[in-house]
Image 1: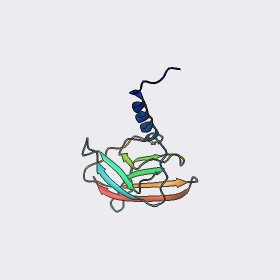
Image 2: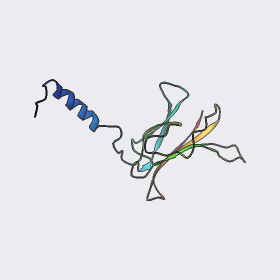
Image 3: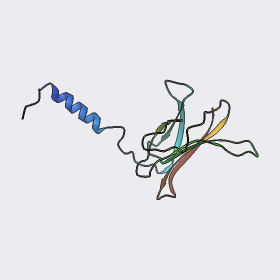
Image 4: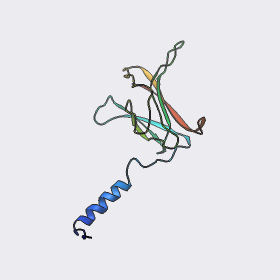
Length: 138
């Protein structure tokens, strides 16, 4: 077996440590109350990002309109993940994270309308282990 060149060893160790700290490693699921933070991306001020604290995983995210009296809410985007592989805590509106599914493409947000974003971690198919929601005007 051929020995490694001494200058390659630090490079290999560095790459291995980065690979072991991959962003795809499982994130612990949220428990209790989740505080949602809404911000825009650095690349596009009109592209929203949903973050939350504590830094933990959720299994559902829903964005819907906040209707005026007498009207019904309209779901504009949602996603779900298996409870074994929660996602988060930063999700960009309309971009479904790896491992998640969205039933339809995101409907473009309308400036001036008010929306509600809700997140939850569902366990056992029907029990809510964590949840949070925030109302915002786009």
